[in-house]
Image (cartoon, rainbow, N blue to C red; front, side):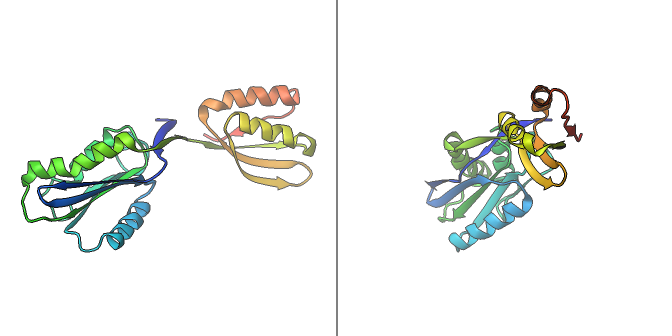
Length: 204
């Protein structure tokens, strides 16, 4: 399983005129099927009256084969959504969605022409799309004294961990998330900081 992968950091739009049909290709961050549905609703509002709104998405890691999907939206079967998904899968990007809006211009393109038309904008867009690295993090927790809190929080920054909850009682109970490959380093830093008195508990 991948512990980190690239995801889109902003939206991108490519417009093309192909044999009198107008194609608008949109790429965006998509981490769930619900996000895809929301974006699709917005696109249909922003581009009313189009003949087709074809889409493809990968809502998880680039290698995921479960949280993926596509739609030809009335185009001949296999001429739009599936080729679009194949382009996304070849990009090594995770959490990426694509919608191609088509305004029909009166000239039929044939299945091969449709495949080229629906993937052309995506291929161009993926070379220009801004991305960022997503680090998978897993739950962990530790307990420290109030006097140690600032130093512990500094350690979190060093290993790119994220604090999800802090409870202040006799001691400070901290819940956080950390990448698997950073666990050993964090444990070592924590041992050095506390002279072996503090220990983090990592979930699987």
